[in-house]
Image (cartoon, rainbow, N blue to C red; front, side, top):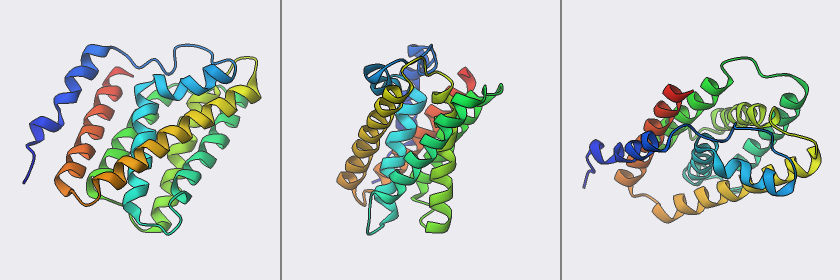
Length: 189
C-alpha cells in the first residue's frame, strides 16, 4: 500500500501555522534551559528525531554509534559556537541539514558507514554551532542539558524507527515529511 504524497505534506500546514522555530530565540542558560533548548526548536527537534530514526535503518551492530557520532559533532559545534560568532546563513545550513536528513530517512541511506558517519558528524557540527552561539553564563550545565535533551530525541527517533521496521511506505512518507519540514524551515530562516 502506498501512501499519497499529499498526506506526507499535511504536517507542513501545521508548521506554517506555528510560525518560526524558537530554537534560536535567545540565550540558553543552565541545565533546564539547555535540556529544553533542543526540544523547543522545530529544526533541532526534527533533525535529532530523524538522526535517531536513520540510525535504526543503517543496521549497525552497535546502534548507538551513529547517534554518538552526531553528539560528538554537536559538542564540537557547540564549542565552536562559543568561540566564534556564527556567520549569517547558519540557519539556512541548519534547515538544509533537515532536508538532507529527510532524504536519508526517505531512501534509507546512506547505509555505508564511510558515508553515514561523516554526514552525522557534519550535521551535529552544524546544529551544535547554532546552539553554542546561544549559551549564556552557565556554559557547562547548559551543554550537559543540551546533550541530554538531544540524546533523548535521538533515542525516541531510534525507537520509532525500530518500531516501524520495514514498513517502507511509512518510512518514505516520514522522509517526505522531514523534507517538507526542512523546506518550510528553510523558507522561514
